[in-house]
Length: 257
Picture 1: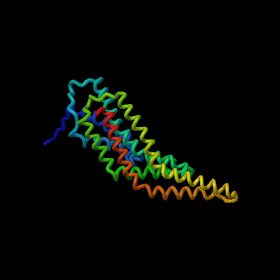
Picture 2 (picture 1 turned 180 degrees about the vertical axis):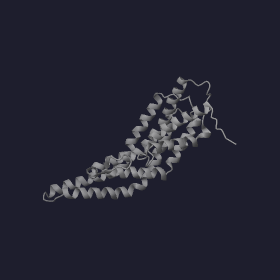
Picture 3 (picture 1 turned 60 degrees about the vertical axis):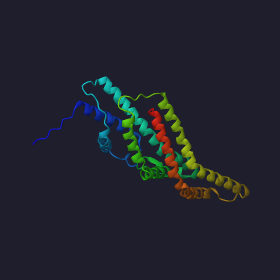
Picture 4 (picture 1 turned 90 degrees about the vertical axis):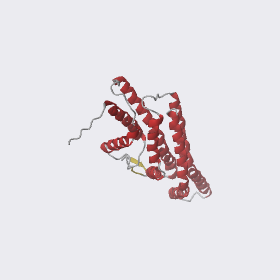
């Protein structure tokens, strides 16, 4: 007996709107390894997440839907997805910010390697920070929290009711300022110790000008950076979870909740 699959216009509209929200969020969420994936793989991933949210799809009156209303709702859903994805991207970008601060100070900025995400030349410490951030992203369950936030947004922000306004922009700007604060907090212990090393090297150079301190400065600062980072790495997960909690609050403020 043949089976016919009949989908109403309202179901298709609901699928399109949810796919727009999911795609808007996944574009900005820095899923580890997704940067090197093909466009087809990204599309399949967004489609799979959309289908997984099928119980949360809105009920859309298909016959009364107009092109203008559909376009407005699509833009609103894209804005909701961006409000979810951008704060999560800021959380992981804090590792890159800390690596950028340390790169030049520790001497790692003079060597570069291939970034597996962007396939471009990047500093060694920056690539290491991105890999560590991706590991923490899965180890701390931030991937599940992001999908959970997408599911909750379907209930808290129904389709067609969101309006992007100045409060959302202010919440995003205020949270973006925290990116620099967290990055500096991660790098500050190492930067302070490297500053003391520079002062000690300068004093030794003044006391004995025949010492070849320039050839010793780079290995000492690099080794010191690795030792201090290995000592403070256990503090990073707690700092990351604290910052992600701020991202959750900022997302709710941007969505007007």
